Image (cartoon, rainbow, N blue to C red; front, side):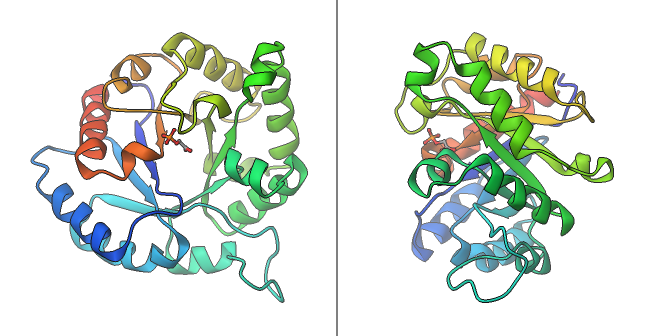
Length: 252
Ligand code: PGA
């Protein structure tokens, strides 16, 4: 039995058509299991409303966003505001995914602004950290994570610390089919927890990077791994269902 609630979070990235979404939920609804873990999905922003509607009728899946702006409001064409997400009743937002860091040049300082703004509007924040292959090979993993945490999570008001969740996603494991071993992941998770100054024991820390139905159980049996942030395998209802089923078993 896990100490903290297990979360299975699907990051759909820039995928899924309306037809695929509808197929996904039809397949999910065939799932004859009692969902004991949290099942969350972050679709493309344009699909948040429609997923919220479907999720409302199916009742068991919470919807979030993959990103938000560091600005409150104003002339920022194409951006997504944290206030707008909160207004829609969105549950959570992913901040600092490695694709945002590398493809869009988002720094720890910029991500800190996003974290604080999203929390100010009451959104749960899944803040992503993780090292590249070169950083791991040069023994920089823990320094990199420590800086990502200390800068990205600076000045979080104590009363909002309960909104923080963290995803440890080694960059070399994302979309590569090469997951970290359970021991590597647990070591990083324990390190992350040891660096949290508020709410450390309660904070949900997810592992991400090539999570699949066949490696989730070995990850979840570790003390500091409270669930997963899942890319590719969350697109297929059958796989996401299997992951949620493992998450539910880990809760019992
Ligand atoms: P993956 O992606 O599961 O396809 O490796 C994980 C992520 O990017 O969050």
